[in-house]
Image (cartoon, rainbow, N blue to C red; front, side, top):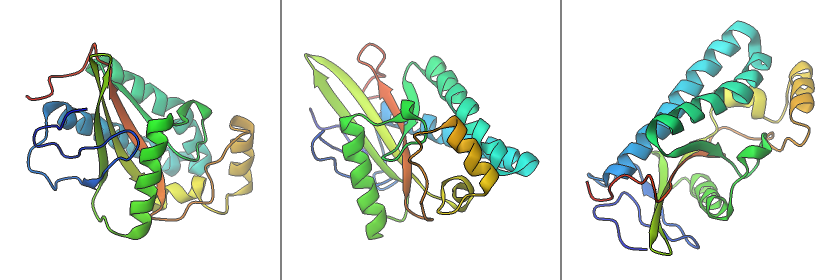
Length: 199
């Protein structure tokens, strides 16, 4: 792995390092593009969740996370050439389970949020050399907000709990409190589709 020029973050797979977004004035193009994709997924999903909750309560929000979140991520992936998604240490949808690298970053995100050291967004970015091919990966922490607690807090309404049990019988994503790590947005640039590193 080589050092990224003016990178927001340098990390290695076994021990990622973190800094606050915006702490470095310039980042390589692929990090900026990854950041935009993560922010777009987050903003679109949050807007749809808000509309669903206003129209049909938290039960309606479950279908947004189940169907619309993957659809938004798939659209962003198709238009960008990257692989855009979400992951977490405690997932609701098993398809979002983290790989080993993502788990290591999520664990560090969780520790940093719990410590109170970081007030702004937490990000991680990597360049991984795989047999001469460089894979680039980006993650952005998702702290638990008040909007999340209806579906991910300690106490769920009975009708909501029944829907989650029906749709996600192996659900792990409850018991959160505001400010804790809920998960992360993830963007992976396979070696064949990675944007230029130094533009």
